[in-house]
Amino acid sequence: MKYFEGGALDLGADASQVVAHICQRHEIKEVNMLCHPVSTNWRQRFTNTKQRLENLEACLEFKTAERQSINLLTEQVLKLGTDGLMATCEATFSGGVMSMTSLVKNGSFHIPMMNLHPNEGVLIKDILNFIRSIYPDKPGYLLSSGRHFHYYGDFLVNEAGWKELFGNFLIAYDFVHPGYCGFRIFDGFSTLRLTTHPIFKPHVPRVVAKI
Image 1 (cartoon, rainbow, N blue to C red):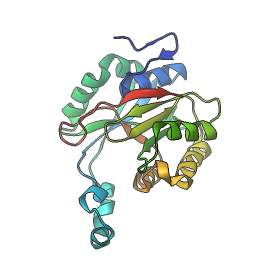
Image 2 (spheres, rainbow, N blue to C red; image 1 turned 30 degrees about the vertical axis):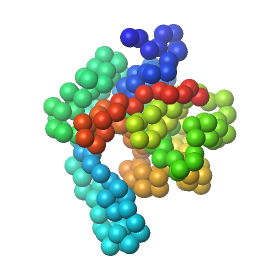
Image 3 (cartoon, rainbow, N blue to C red; image 1 turned 90 degrees about the horizontal axis):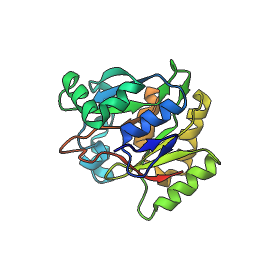
Image 4 (cartoon, one colour; image 1 turned 30 degrees about the horizontal axis):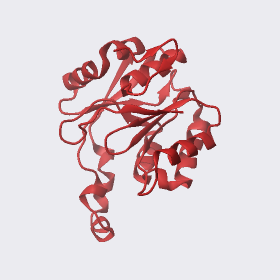
């Protein structure tokens, strides 16, 4: 099924189609992906403050986790789709998943991307209203990742704009997990998952709302 024709992207499109669509619209010819391991995270393993304080060293394990960077042409992303991206990742990083990184055009710009981890009581409409409040008249997409949500802006920002994105979401902290923001600030770019893992990440992220 084709999910976009002439600039339109439909509900149900998967994350690889969202990435290809945005890149085509903004003349991004090449993207950088990361293949990396997935598992239960620190907060899932240690569910209360006492446990987390006793295991603080584990929250920084990501710094030493092995990752494999892969550059792909936008047209390859579109052609491969989710299944092809999974196979590409498996060939170089067995058992991992592939994530899109936000840095594009030789690191000059970012695609606005955020992993959303809303607190209890936050609805999809609340997420959409907040995004529209910080980016009036800017198009984008909200994807369901299975447990939570992913946001992709259909526009580009510079380094200052990327930092502003994280600042806005950290201030309105009911929408994000600060751990994700910390990881991404360390890296200097955002990442969002495109493929699946049968145990830890079984759902392909798909569009549930257009902004």
